[in-house]
Length: 149
Image (cartoon, rainbow, N blue to C red; front, side):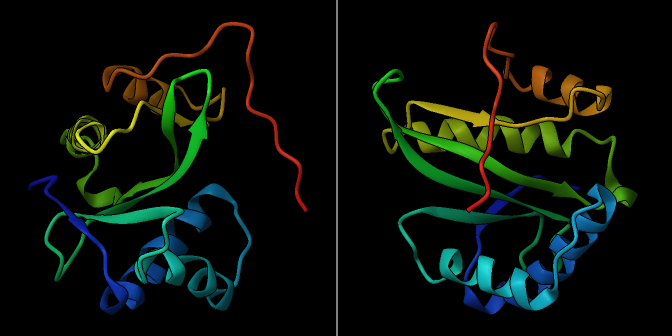
C-alpha cells in the first residue's frame, strides 16, 4: 500500500464526501453531505485558500488530507493548517499517514511554505504519537483556540 499523494480535482468529490463522512463519524462531527460538498468543492475547484490530496490511488483512495493556507509574520510567510487527515481503518498501522505527513510538507516547502500547524485531541495518544513521528511538536504555552462565526 502506498501513501502516494494526488492533488484532488472536482471529479473526486463523491469519493471525498464518502471518506470525509467516515472521518466525521469517527470524530463525532455532525455535518450533512450537502455541507461537506459545499466545504470541499471550492478546494477542488482551485481555491487559493487550500488544497485536498488523495492518499493512495486516485481511482480508489485510501484516505485524504486537507490543508488550508494562511500567512504568518512569526513564521516568516506562507503557513498552513492541516485541517483533516483520514486513512481508512483497514489500512491503518502501515505507516501511510506518517509517510503522507512527511511528504506533503516537504513538497509544499518547495513552494515557499514556512510552517504547517495542526490541532489534535490531547487525549488521543495514538494521533499525538503519529504527529510527533512526522516531526510535529507542541508549542509550549500555546493552545489552538477557535470562535465559530
